[in-house]
Length: 132
Image 1 (cartoon, rainbow, N blue to C red):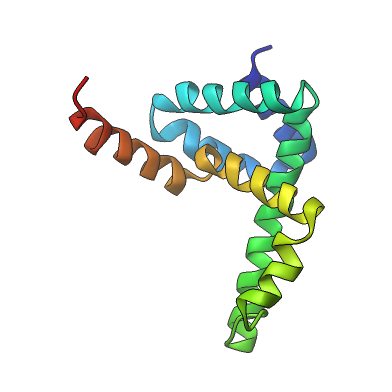
Image 2: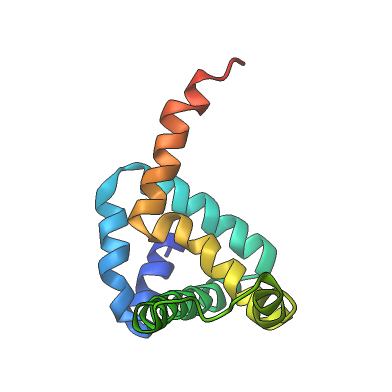
């Protein structure tokens, strides 16, 4: 089973609500396999074989946190943290929270279809114009 198949299986079993997003990205462009394969290989190289599962778990928590923060913002009409200092203390200074956040964002590069679309736009419109 390759890394994309492992990713799909883990999401199907542990985080089935994320399957729709995965399928949207899979169906966006044939480049998904190339991009996701590269990102997942880097993930496993950095975190070991178990890093795939822990990164997907971090991605699921990241998605929930983003959605909950958006809901709180819409209800209150303002952001939960009122200053960068509050954000820094709550997120950036907390190693566990920040690690989860970074791995969640990392996987969002290809698991959120709009992020994958932006990456493809960057490749097609910018990188192809670079010389050599």
